[in-house]
Amino acid sequence: MTTEPTAFLYPFIDSEERDKEGLLVDLARSAEEKWGESDRLTAETLARCDQQVHDAAAAIVERVRDGGRIFTFGNGGSATDAGAAAQQFSSPPHGEAVPARSLADAPSILTALANDIGVAAVFSRQLIACAGRADVAVGFSTSGGSENVLAAFGEARRRGMLTIGFSGYEGGRMATCPDIDHCFIARSDSVHRIQEAQAALLDALWGAVQQELARTSFQEASL
Amino acid sequence: MTPAPAVARDLAPAALALARRFAAGATLWCLSPQWPSHAAHVAVEFVHPVIVGKQALPAEAVTAPDPVAVLRANVRSGDVILAISDARNHVVADVLRRAGAWGADTIWVGAGERPTAGAAGHVLWLDCDAAGAGPLFVRIYHLLWELAHVCLEHKGLLAATDPTECDGPVCITCSDEGRLAEVLSADDDEATVRTAEGRERVDITLLGPARPGDLLLVHAGTAITSLEEEGR
Image 1: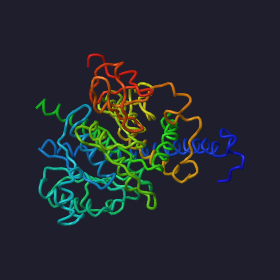
Image 2 (image 1 turned 90 degrees about the horizontal axis):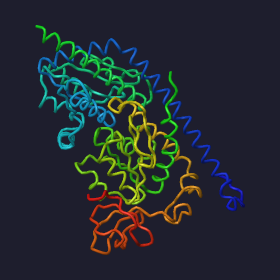
Image 3 (image 1 turned 90 degrees about the vertical axis):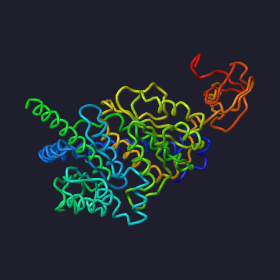
Image 4 (image 1 turned 180 degrees about the vertical axis):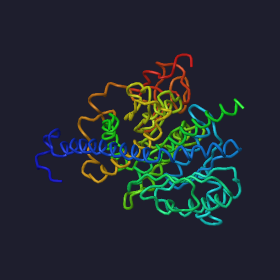
């Protein structure tokens, strides 16, 4: 950055001051563009996955009515998305609470498994301990290739669980994984935009589950 | 497609302020009593960037039962506290009102009814209902991370202090204002308080009894106003 030797005399008009304003203008424009990009990806993903969302919701409610519980999992930002999903289902802002928990929320369990067995087993080993055939596995991976997420789907399949995946890019290995019943793909190559669209998909899935719960509770009441 | 909401533009000054604090050695403290997963998500973004080659930055999610106690013990002057909540969350409000005494900058992300003016240094707010705003909160803190890293590449602007920006007790525009202080201990006439500049002894005879945790405004070695409610 070049500065006139006399710039210190005029602190309000030196080049750095103008550059800061220029940077703020660029940042605001960039934020607006990325916001629009996320809007478009979210709208495209929700439209493409609409039928899939309703099919998965019906399958989840079938399990829940049978005593099933939802187990969510993922790594890093996807671990926190798994936590948010478990909270959305089990402590909803309105509607019916559904038993749901995140396998990524307890450092005691995660560190014990990672240290004693290996990071690939941190979710699958918890399913062995806690989950059964009426339950639902919901896994998040932006790449679609996380080893421990795929291992958990494999274990969930062996246990007869319903399996639902959230992936990004072109779906990665999750797209063709025979262990996953419903695989939602946010088609982007930005990890952030993928997670944003996945969060909207999860919201849509939760909404569809609530509709299905309300519909089937009416059916049960009229029997 | 609807145009981006105002919060997208508000992210720009927040990101620059955050980047400046990081460049000076700040830790980012993340707090969301209503949605702890969001606080954890912000922390992992900064500590372990999704883009290879981006600098790992110090951030921590505060999920303990008493965030005020944890933050009071850990926050150093110059740090930044980022809260995600609705405007009515009492824990977040209590943290943010104390942050000035700890020397911390504040960023408040939320939705719905807006907080009162000045409740945080940067308010990144959505007009929609907070209960359904989760996916947009993710978008806001992703963009904050992305823009802060752009700022970190503009090294010349990180150390710059604008002459127009208030920078503490010598600022000509606020030299008559009191500085925020949190009482650490007090006797009848004097209290030991914490301010952004560190520990100080101040005269409290104008105010009467003060208790640990009380917030005061101090000026020239004297507590001139208590910010605690009467009869608390």
